[in-house]
Image 1 (cartoon, rainbow, N blue to C red):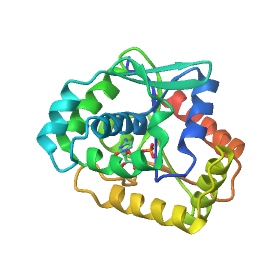
Image 2 (image 1 turned 135 degrees about the vertical axis):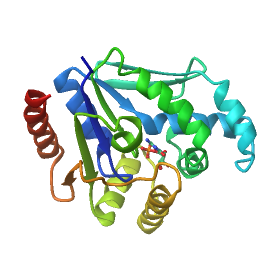
Image 3 (image 1 turned 180 degrees about the vertical axis):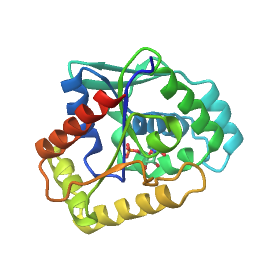
Image 4 (image 1 turned 60 degrees about the horizontal axis):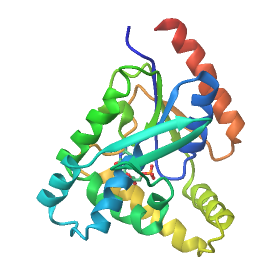
Length: 225
Ligand code: C5P
């Protein structure tokens, strides 16, 4: 029998990671942050100083890269060629540059393979931009998480502040808008909300309320599948 997949897609700052992690913990599913994989390859390209227009070199690099994940005690970690890069991939520079890596089909295919293999042995809560559309079109439950741009920028601002980083609110808002624009309009695997998604606007909801909604949807779908 096919393992159960809860696909969670949506724009930056919609609360995907927080919510997906809690849902995975409650259901004892494996949580997978696919954005972390695109970020890890971006970090490697930056370290090797490969220019982002050199697609062939980037593809070659991706082919020769080992990406692993772990999820223990509610903590997700990502390893690049055996090295834990969970924190390094979170910088603004990596966030910005990831769109180059994410727009290369061959690189996406390499990561799709890794992502699909994880279903062989695990029930999954997987989050990203194309999980329900490309990675697992047959996912048993597809959720699209959204929130107003104002709210998403506020959350990012707060998150940075907690990390001790003071950033200008308008600047953050602009960066999120630009990233969304790229993710929505790229040719390959853009962020789209298909008709088979459950849409949840998290703007005025607490994390617990969003988690509750997803768990309720899961209960309905687990019975049917
Ligand atoms: O989710 P996160 O913000 O960490 O993702 C970083 C970037 O990686 C996104 O802006 C997007 O360009 C890319 N991404 C993607 N497909 C995914 C996950 C992330 O293209 N499934």
